[in-house]
Image (cartoon, rainbow, N blue to C red; front, side):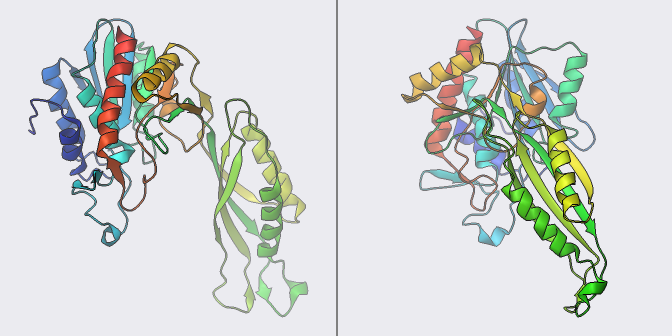
Length: 376
């Protein structure tokens, strides 16, 4: 047990960062957090599903139910030789703490844990929901916990997710929703043969190039007042006959769309099918919808967050739905009042991920102020 008489955020994050919790391995992070929470009045409930650890912890009773949500898993560090400091050493240098997961998102968890000692909880229930499956398939993590809690009649009044949302300064951006995410794996089957006899082949590479050009130029929508426009990126292309004088008989493509509510999944699928068919080869497409767009309500939580940030930082945050997916797509089912607020995302998922120590302490103060407003 790593006992802490005071939950200093730097001590907390340092203890968490030395645990190599590469998804879905929690590496004991949630147990350690539970040991810190129990003496502070929290009731702990472990909710494992498959190989994923999930923790649901509550203090207080009744309404409002206010949740801080996050994840203890991190993405792999990649080539460790490229790191300035070992990725799980939690080295402090030049006013930063360096480690995989420092910003995404063990720093946020540590800031919240430290804020507990300053939160003025006059009523209601304060809860913590953690998973070790956010960076992975996201099947046995928050999605399963939310489904279980809903089956038990749990309804939250406000949810704050500690995702790294800040850009150039702490809390300058508040995520109020996210676009959807739709991926496609596309196979075009043509007719292979000798490159010297073009009349005897049907080159799928040429057909794919035509379709890619059309789809890249396609304007899906203009977004709306809350969401940026739908965007699309091709992420891989594979076609190799093994020799330079043979036309391959098929090609595989992969792409992802981050789509706003202005464009439906059905529209995207129809445009893809028609575009590829127009090139002369009908595709085989395997679709994977990992997230639909969601938007948190413009209610008490959002107003409290803006007031808190303005008070603590001296500026109002930008309200944004940009960026990648998050577990907000599941948590929105527990409460329409949902935001994401955390440290800088400048180095997340990169070599030499780091977190400014000053940001860590400021985030602690922001969380303490915000949760106190919600539970006053």
